[in-house]
Length: 346
Image (cartoon, rainbow, N blue to C red; front, side, top):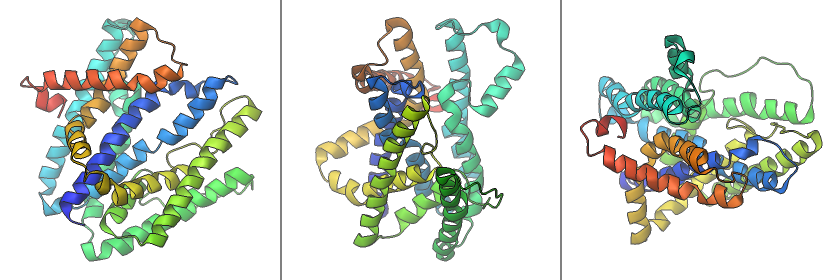
């Protein structure tokens, strides 16, 4: 598979994941448990859409680990700073002002310098920006893994991924689900957390998987999704509150499901992109995926504040991402005409 094909399917996954993120946030009533019907559909939507963040991290692994082939370490950090850090800082501060001046959720009296610094370091000035903190950590760690000789990467990355899966994911999951009561601090720190997805993305992207392996991944992915949906619903109904046993980006069911989505994208994405219409749509929307993530929450807040829609409605949860996306694209297009546009909506 040549480089252009990889970019195509990764662009498709990026567009799908960006839209999925918007849908996750319009479906946030999932986090308020209820026995009413809306929570049943909210749970299904939540579990289906939760692949977005892991897939973004896998895309980073597929696109960035070979950065030494294209530019120096200095250029790598300059690019990451320009494309992600500067926009993050700008929109975090703007988001804070937006909450004070337009939404009136906060007061300047409660905002101190320490509050702003803590918010930037934790990603909570705009709640959905938590994603940037692990992303920045991964950016700082990638050069270490990129320095591994290419001929050794498959072996080393596979070893790290396998150890992480066994000791950090599978065993804790089994212990938690079956209540075995095993107390162990044994874990693999290298490649842990979201960095695990980065290496997975690289391995899947750079290696061909035979049909039997792909089918196994798809079956396990479907199983992971069903476990998330059915397990979370049944346990939460009994407990009368959300039970998080099967939820979580770094939990076994989500890992299985997310890997299957990424694999599906690799082996079927390019088939879809053979259609000129789909290809043009992906190329067009791929220019807005990052700005969409940066801006969409502010637009959603505004819609909820000034139009007061029924956020429990399935129409809102499925339909509202459309105008949010269109408005974000319009704002991005207008901002890019200004001199600062390339810095805040790259």
